[in-house]
Image (tube, rainbow, N blue to C red; front, side, top):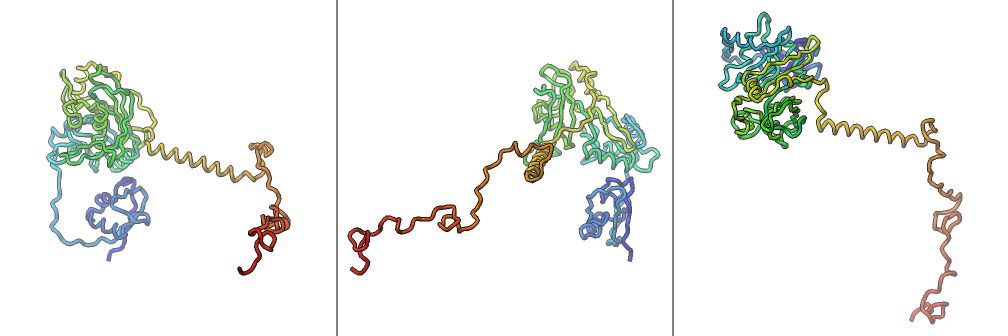
Length: 425
């Protein structure tokens, strides 16, 4: 019988999901088997139980139980990608605006999907075979753009770079700047939209909406670069979270849909006067740390229809590119509450320490006790005597009067002083 196996996670697999690690290094192990191992506690990472969705770190030790023979089934035909045509290869290579040993940055045209789906066979992921060149591994997508959104799209050339870039996006250290034309002019020229977004139920296709009840936190910042009277505005957009259709939903929610975005702006999202009906949302710039040090910082030129609309509206392109500050996104409401709570806790702790040191010897940095107000001292307790109020020696209350000092009781006329005689009637 086979023995338990141990594997050390390599640098190229840093950040990869556990189930994807098996797919890459143990292709004969099915996902169902991995799930069963995890469910029964046989699958361990650094001695602890692991789940298929856990992410691995370089240097961790993966404990794998003996491979169990699975019931014989008809082998599935291996899916192969059809080779690219010369035109497809030329198309993907024409999109490259930056290339190094670890990454490509593409300027994706509008109308081309990033990944495939129902009835979508032509997409960037399919065309990436044209960028493999002499490397063994195939280039990998690390984020995506909507089909009708153009602009900078980062592609990793190696597994190590893909894991590194994925961490940057999940950790919110990657910075993306978008340009957009919006209908109307926002009242606030530099604003933050903080509205949760959820998938809209009961709609065909992928559509999102603002939902306070079940939406995920979503924040976007916008800045007005130039305005066209009250008709339209050219804005810079920066997403601080990565929700589906986030910028489109947020701009429509504040009453300024992106020009050409009929999905979220309806008929109001289109301008007359020769302005294109295509969507005017472009990923202008991406800045992200590089796996080998330094940064990838690339801008992508506007697509033809966007540039023509800018000219038609009389907008000045030289006003667009602004310095990108190094500070991160502003804190969320939850983060602000957490900071305030921690601050209040620290103040209470300091005050508690002051109370504990009231009886301690005086310190030079504290005022003398002679300057403090003190409560009057209590009278000393009696050395001898009974309880207070008993009239016994040592009591702090006078004794109750004896019967000789009390007023006479009883009815008048008796033979007893002050009352009737005692006896039978």
